[in-house]
Image (cartoon, rainbow, N blue to C red; front, top):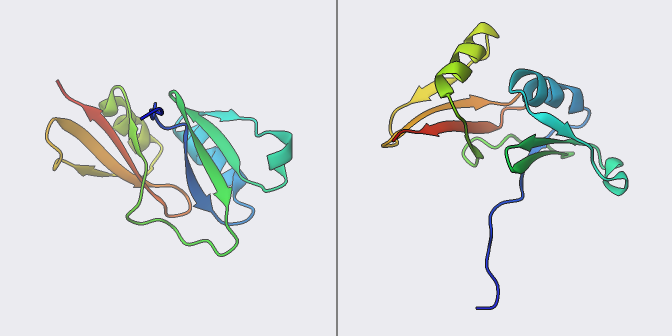
Length: 123
């Protein structure tokens, strides 16, 4: 083959119209991700983008929005115990899951009901 996949640039999650500020509160304020300015040509579509390590999470506006309950991004974090403590202090609900060998992981939902997995691999 003359092509090679190098990774994932971004993951897009859908959200209802007018939900950009809720997305900012969740992804930027609660999870600490930096907002990325959208290109001018794409701003009219609505939505908001966030930096997540070397990748991005794009929150796209969907007119007939339905949250993703099974499909989800899995975000790798360093020091998941600190994250869980932070989420608990902020009264943000999450569920622990111990079914993946060699990983500590939790699930939570964004403000729109989309499922998000967060994990830390154990050595």
